[in-house]
Length: 271
Ligand SMILES: [Zn+2]
Image 1 (cartoon, helix red, strand yellow):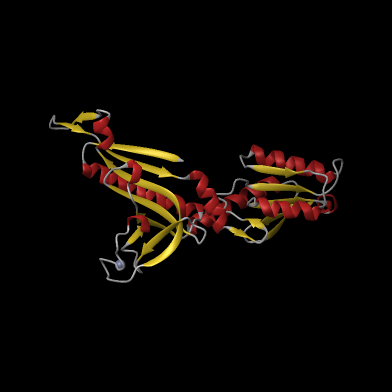
Image 2 (spheres, rainbow, N blue to C red; image 1 turned 90 degrees about the vertical axis):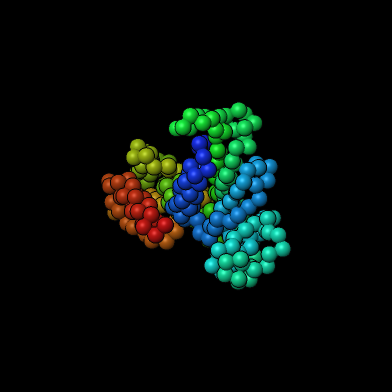
């Protein structure tokens, strides 16, 4: 869990920070490629305080239920829904969907600052209990939700912004082959350029290695096989689109880095 807290002299300060955090959370989810995330009102629960929201990713496997109207004027966790069957703003009926919580934010007010004696003097020298906000983002459950939304029949297919592995170098050929030397060079070159890289130099069949690479879901698969020897080329394949690029052995590492940057830019343009 990523936690953050904000401390203010008054409620207006808290509300400003609450808005800033809300905006930042939406940007984080968008950039990771998470879809269908909605901010819904939730119970303050054990944390206490005056107002709380959850960020809910709509998913059929979710453990929570969200009630919302068509325009999302009303959006609440059904835990806090009291008898309401229609939206107070538009009058529309409330629909229900399963969802997973991927973040929660609280306006805590002065509950903890009073208990902990956390006071400060304001500009007019008036002693005030600090007004607190709390902001949590569920990093580990976020990964589960991302995989739930971003996979195909072959395995994990995360966006480049959220994938754990940038490039997966698959060596086809024995340990003393030219392919093995080229694969090791490309692997070292990618690491030196700051990418997170896997090297598959196992003594296994090509099909098995490709299946495992798809399952793990690195953004790019770099296949180094007999063509590295024969025509001096390697193949780069994009996990999410399946697009294939042939590049020369000598500039393969640079080509992988550039392609990875291109994919990140493409994602940022739509997310
Ligand atoms: Zn409504």
